[in-house]
Image 1 (spheres, one colour):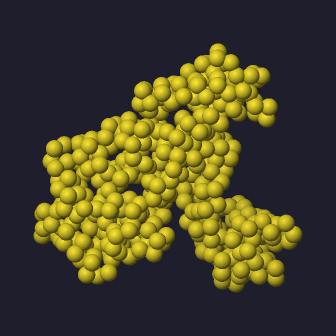
Image 2 (cartoon, one colour; image 1 turned 180 degrees about the horizontal axis):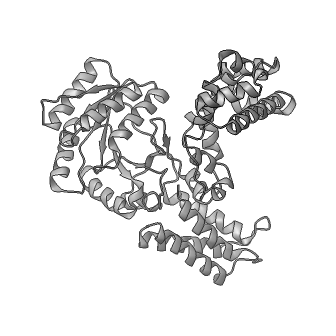
Amino acid sequence: MFDSLSGKLDKAFQVLKGHGKITEINVAETLKEVRRALLDADVNFKIAKEFTNRIKDKALGQDVLTTLNPSQLLVKIVKDELTDLMGREVVGVNLSSKPSVILMSGLQGSGKTTFSGKLALHLKNKKSKNPLLIACDVYRPAAIDQLTVVAEQVGAAIFKNLEEKNPVKIALDGIAFAKANKHDLVIVDTAGRLAVDEVLMKEISEIHKAVKPDETLFVVDSMTGQDAVNTAKAFHDVLSFDGVVLTKLDGDTRGGAALSIKTVVQKPIKYIGTGEKMEALDVFYPDRMADRILGMGDVVSLVERAQEQFDHEEARKINKKIAKNQFGFDDFLSQIQQVKKMGNMKDLMGMIPGVGKAIKDVDIDDDAFKYIEAIIGSMTPNERSNPELLNLNRKKRIATGAGRDLKEVNQMVKQFHQMSKMMKMMQGGKGKQMMQMFQGLR
């Protein structure tokens, strides 16, 4: 995400490299490039100008710190300003009522229905909620079917009435159903249009007045840039929503929506969608996003994702197997599947400081592990438990069964032995302490 913006900001900071101090001339030259990068990212011109003016005032108003060179100092100032621009504070959703009602709004194609499912799963796992999804899009073909599939994927209940065409009545009946069936969270999926129009605004306003939601979220496709901000303002004028959701941040996002929307509507960005999987939902942290935009990575989020997927009991079993030299291919596959659950591979690698820039032009296939799964699936149970059995003939049979080359089988076996060796090394001394800290076993 934000690869283009990150690259252009990095280029802007190169202007200061080699300078011993900040001057009005080199700051002006750098900020010209920063402003150009923001405009290319489809940030509102007025916001971009005010942003760079604030940076200029701060940069020229500071003494040059002995521990920082001019480039580093300006990066720090830009990071602070980016964080402020996107909201600085992390703002959660209001779940005080029983049931708590969350109303989804936005244009057609913004990802409302998919996000409704993601949010249901997120709050089910994080807050132990019992969610109910209400299907109020009575216009778009297959909209109710889509929400039904999404509800099944995340293990949530759904309320729908195929005979009723009044979305206000469906919403009210759905909330009554939630109360009667002990659902403490209701997510109302509403209809969208291809553009803002009077019919859409009247309908969403009527639903809002009738259900009196605890939280109203505006879902916006982050790839639409400044148009998304304009749409958000139109919705906010009618609904006065509580927060923004940015979807499709795993795509070729220019960044204009994320950087402009808070200033325009004065409402926080609460969640971001980072992939197609139902688990691909993150709480929005302005400071972490600023780090990522500036190519500094996001180690905290990476560790949090790892901890969410970490199975303590499975880890103990694997540690025992490693100690007894019993680590097998089934265990190897289990570790791979835990990594896959963490999300989009390129997004994950981009969280590592310095890696995002290096892989921005590299195509990383999310199905890169599929051939490993196929190869292990072609082994007998005995071979999976006893890797030392794999001779040339067995490898040839496995390659044929998996539909892969013998070279790929050998490569996978090599990766297995490397991982096994590394995990054994990590069991001793400082490595063990690091693993315990990371895994939260202390």
